[in-house]
Image (cartoon, rainbow, N blue to C red; front, side, top):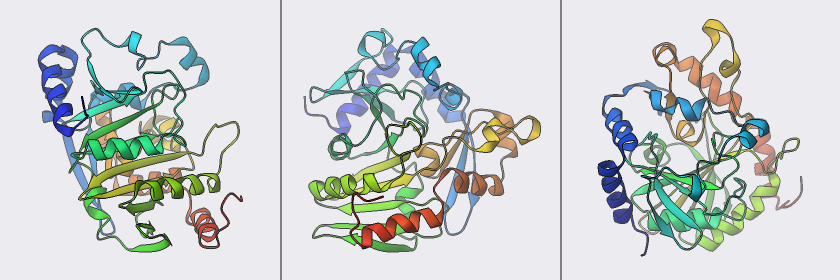
Length: 317
């Protein structure tokens, strides 16, 4: 079976009839509270979604990972959960703890670490097949609740504000090839490389050269990043967000200063997820601004990367 958006939608419809947990949580999405903040030419929506507590508060330290069964390995999936294959390496699964009205997880069959370098090409292929959806990648310390099992996620287009905003936000081109344009977004509170291309190979080539310019911290296995990718009218769009921190200070704070927010790709795409109602009620525009600045790399560090690209200092730190 060739993977298509319609195949995925049909899988979701059948799973909602067969799988009680998924049915309950997708139905609950109809009643989630949302609110919206206007920032500097763009919006951030906040969603109160209690089902996401499992992801937002996930323990992703090595000891916790070792002590639990991997919930993305085929042998550990719920008996009700069915998937559709993508090639012989991935399967598309309905995410039973959704953020989007149509939300999927796309894990490798093989249990292998969440690392993007040799899988970015797969992400572009998936985005083309699932052209009604936005693909996203959360790094192992950037929101992935299964850092030990490589996977992507996909959510229905039109949900994330960034999809529409990138056309209007101030941009600066930092690299160009025949069918590829790479720019950075200005005044967006989260530093981001925007790849636009009609040539998948050019996108992969640029990504492979950008990757070693990004910092690998401590004993991490890859630079911290989140990626959003979608395919529209023959063009791939990829937003690559280099990260500075996994979780903001408010995640660990005590008392009134605590906000249980663990930002990942969806948050960087413009929808902040709050699994606790108290946080949904009290979060402010200033909180959002502070969190984005804290977890994303600073302007100065972003400029150093841009300078390396412009001066063709690939593969040099």
